Image (cartoon, rainbow, N blue to C red; front, side, top):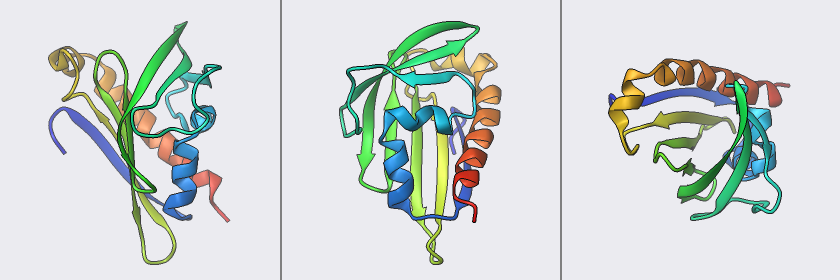
Length: 145
């Protein structure tokens, strides 16, 4: 992928629609989060994400804070991405595999950020690569026999 993206893939032992249901339920995001920063969905948001949906999350990175996200890419059972005020995106792509499994690709994309060079110079790309590895491992563990 591009120089302003970090992307990793893993094959998961379940179907795309099952994974998509997890991704479109903000209350389930803390279960998937490998960064340890996502705490809970804020009350009053949508129970299921769709294109253009806005949803708040309680976060913690050193201090607690809240973040408002907007779904900016959406294709049922195949793709979802959201961004917050700075414009960078978290994208999940789901590709069915012949044996009923799914190739899941998670991407941290800061090419759309307001000031992408600041993210490029920060530790976030490296940290987010490690967090993506953990997120995909968590997802894998959910569906192991």
